[in-house]
Image 1 (cartoon, rainbow, N blue to C red):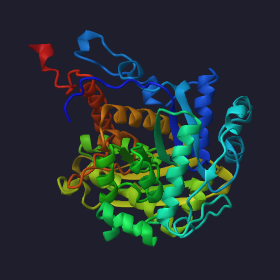
Image 2: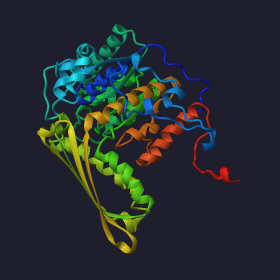
Image 3: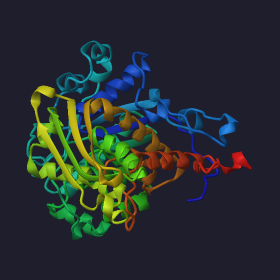
Image 4: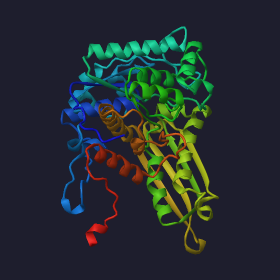
Amino acid sequence: MKIPDDIAPPRGRLGVLLVGLGAVSTTFIAGVHAIRRGLAAPTGSLTQLGTIRLGKRTDGRSPRIRDFVPLAALDDLVFGGWDIFEDNGYEAARKAQVIQPDLLERVRPDMEGIEPMPAVFDRHYVKKLDGPNVKTGRSKRELAEQVIADIRRFRAEHQLDRLVMIWCGSTEIFLEETPVHASLAALERGLETSDAAIPSSMIYAYAAIREGIPYANAAPNLSADVPALEELAQATGAPLAGKDLKTGQTLMKTMIAPGLKARLLGVNGWYSTNILGNRDGEVLDDPESFRTKEESKKSVLDHILQPELYPGLYDDLHHVVRINYYPPRGDNKEGWDNIDLLGWLDYPMQLKINFLCRDSILAAPIVLDLVLLLDLAKRVGMNGIQEWLSFYFKSPIHARGLYPEHDLFIQLMKLKNTLRYLRGEELITHLGLEYYD
């Protein structure tokens, strides 16, 4: 795309539609309300705290990202969403037990005002959950039309200028592309016949994209990343991002694996195990949903380490991923990694990592950044796949025929260079020879 002559300013109110009002969504919403009130800091948010270097290192130009590109203000965000349970935002956050009770009470009026709309849900795709707040329809096409009606009503009731939708629902069972995903015409026929290869998340994605609304998938399941919806996004101007938020153990892998590869240290084993007790953990206790997550988590090392280019170092890598549902931990996930390394003269070494993290606390600022950056992309006129947002995902969607970029530091450089490009600034290559001429 050519450098835009101008970026449309973020005038008016931005609606944020969240599919699933569980731990991630309620932690994000409560956090934004707390930040608005001056009760907390936006720690972990690149758009709120991050800076971007402009020009040479000697120029001393490093503004905050939020001052460099026109992003929507937090005060202009309006929240809504769908869930299979009828709990309002406050009740859902209290049950998730992520936000400290005293802080949650201080934003209680804001949270109580969020009433979930009935959700599109089918236990075939998420076997461990069930709830009463569910839409019914004669076909998946009818369900999609109900979601579109919800979107339009939400926009009108809150007098919104723009919208963004994020799938924060549970991980669905593993699905592969089939002929129903090959074109928009095939997908729409599949919606009419309620084709089993169209999961609930894809119905939401279709509804959002048909309305020209930016859509991101925070889970690893097949959703907008099919040719049919990529075709629709090009036609309606909807930006797409996904999939599977990079929060805990995989975040560590995308930091550490590039370092090991940079030093050309061999890796012949990487054993990863997790325990978590939130709704996500319960859903992943089902083997079919776990397979979706496993595929997402295991692909990272292959693409970073590139065993086809470094066969002596990485072609015999034994990569094991385990996730165990352990209710006492709630949202406090713990991950262990044992990495078996080879150094000079193939001397063996080990690296062990124990990451005690809070799943939704790590995810919430990512959701905020995606909302603001997808809205920016829409105002710039960037449609379809937004690979520059790969920084936030375990399985970044990308143009067909390319391999995905998983190195966290390359991803960050790509994101910042995209912002520089949009503002007509020089791209940063880090060559630096000009300092020594």
